[in-house]
Length: 324
Image 1: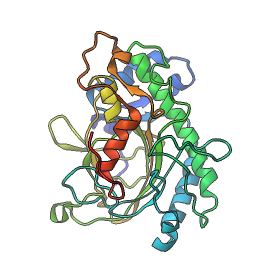
Image 2: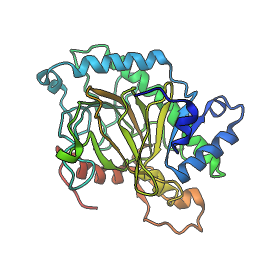
Image 3: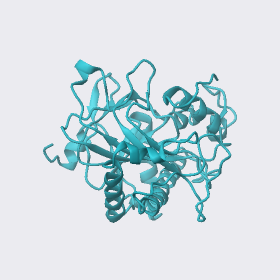
Image 4: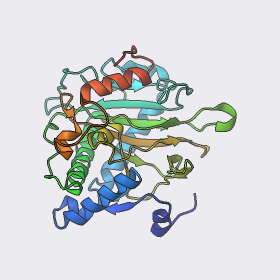
């Protein structure tokens, strides 16, 4: 991919926002307004000055490559658990009904405390499964998890300020998050028009917020308002952030959860680092808590945990479907 200028990236329609003044508190209001506008109009944005060190990103990318280059027998020693922790091989996810399985493999982990213990109070979290054949992965992954959560919390503070709310409006039940982090490896793929297969098929994200660190391969595309697909190419030293379905629901549709997809036509592997940020499972997703009691919710209130359980049963082949 030819190198693009920052102005060319901006002209693609996906805003690029410097969140440094939000992170350090020096001038948060303009950043909050920019986040608010991007979430209303596009649902996707790039962030610069996010605070995650290049060293941390390089360390986790190297560990991810080591993991994925092992054979399936090794990777399946940490096969995905019922708590959605561990290795999920090719074909394990269908992000939209009626689509072929996604052409990706993932390693998934989540919150654990300083003693390495994880809550087991919800079906989508529990003990992390760390591979013995990549012993360094645990410390590297948990360090990245901590840093990217700090970014997510700053962004949620910015969204609250952009809505004219106290900065902690979305963060009152976030100490032990239900978030999932993933290393995602996309093999090269054939022509989508011939096979109907995607790295990830067109979908919206389930939870509150997604924070993505992509490599320089490219392949992420975002659906524009006119229905066309717009590339979201990698910009060095940025993260891609998008609104999920729960944040759209929490804001009663003020923020957009935008469809997106991945097509890896590069001819080589593509690696992504993903945080699907969510608060604690008991958190009620009720727009009246955000927009006031006069708000007429488009959808009934639901707990974060119940909503995600329902969505996961539909998307992942190893889980049993449920109705809601």
